[in-house]
Image (cartoon, rainbow, N blue to C red):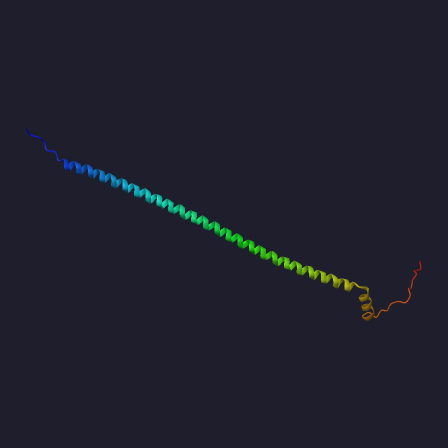
Length: 127
């Protein structure tokens, strides 16, 4: 009786090759997904770092503005106190210049006037 010879090794190697091919394709898909996930992670990381740096920069700029405003306020307060002191000096000087002693001394020395010893009354005649 004649029997058919089967080559089991060829079938084994073909099925194993198919399995290897499927495993390779699966591994390639996984690597592509990993690369895509890594790119997404990297992009998110850069965006997060960028946002953190932007917030830090905004905080630094705000702090600088506050310090500048504080320094300006101190200068204005110093200037205010100086002007108040100058105003007080000028008020004292005005009071001295308005004094009757000064006015009489200027009238006597510069204008040649004299203080009257008695009051003189002038009467107007009605016509």
